[in-house]
Image (cartoon, rainbow, N blue to C red):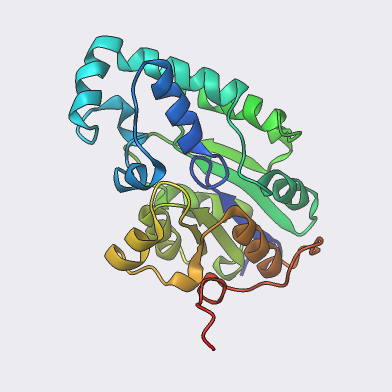
Length: 246
């Protein structure tokens, strides 16, 4: 039925592999704006997505953005992404392993809002010793489009069985796009949406959610049969977070 026996992994960029919060915080600070701590930032989970609009910004930021220009803010953010932004801990090593694995097709689908986003990601990943040309695909889609169609198109392009296909994401829409295309979602709660929002509002099973990049890397290695480096055996986050009851 399928032309490939490989596994497929589709990575998200902002909030899953890239520490977007720190980059956005630095960009806003450069313009004299404060976005608040990460917990409040996650409650305004579409903040980055709305740099083309203003409805989810606090009133003080809306007022100042009209003065400073959103275009200038995005220009600043682009420079920070290219020169300073970092991947979450452990992600660079994981991506290099995925690229080297002969039985895995791996790439990125992103809605990154920086100027010339593919060039931005090229520079960012190169600073982490990753050549994005070695990925099997790198796709940028507009903010107004959902990822569902692109997930399906990517899986069909490589002829991968949906049961052998996986996505990584930090927003409930990533989860819905994965489920809609028959793929397994690796969700994280350290990006644009917090654990409580994912599990309570959108009823995403906590067993699918990693609370840290280290846990995400462990889950992926275990599921994709990658060689496990010096690390603890896989455990899900519910066990990791369980109280020690005597």
